[in-house]
Length: 321
Image (cartoon, rainbow, N blue to C red; front, side):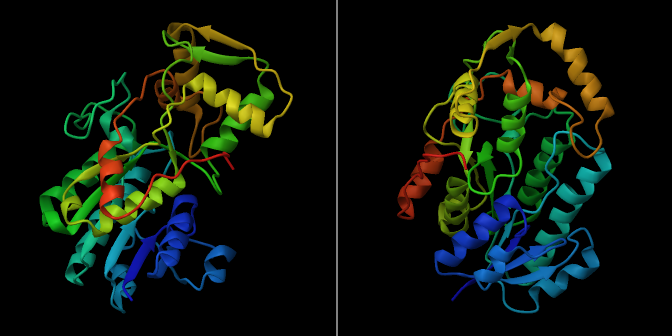
């Protein structure tokens, strides 16, 4: 039985991935920062408490044979100090990947983000047509880009792959779904910003599809050295997303929508960004504003092709929970 090291197994995506790989027949070792989730204990997953930013301590993760590393642990936020992101999302990646290669790991699968493409209006471009947005200022995509570039420059192509999910949701979501539901619950109006008036695509990626893509990226020969966008095939607009969440979590609530010009909201978003620390003080931040006001409409052909090659099918959701 092959063994997978899943970093960030105590988190939202990491715990889903750890359970997925156990169910797929692998032995899983998971890293956690603080607490061990009951979910991991119930599945019999060995957990190791470790600070991945401590490069001197990483070798103990490989005291037993590890066949693959699925690196999910990261600082994920639209606000925060640059140095926090550099330490967790770049320096730790370099250290862990280097130690993994020293211990003969077959492939290092890196969970990146579709935000490496930038926040613009897209028209269904594939990975072959997309490029990194080298102008990004937000530290989250900035250090994801730098990590991907470092892996490409320092690891053999066959030894790494990069998985770039869009907006992840699904079982156990502690981020985007509760944040949006709280907004819908407390705001008297639903606001859209700019020209799209809520008709732009909201690029959803169910956490199960993220897990299946991580699996394909880990085992497919042609996935070596490549990046793949994770995106559900069903096209959902921002407006439709709000209405679907309200129907599920706030039954009976009537949504009233209004569109405001970007020039009016951008100073407020800038203030939110400036005052926020590790979490947004209030919405929208500048990063969140650019996300919800652009048409993030990518192609998922590579994801679907990889699924087909490993005998997987796309997961289709019927709930946001």
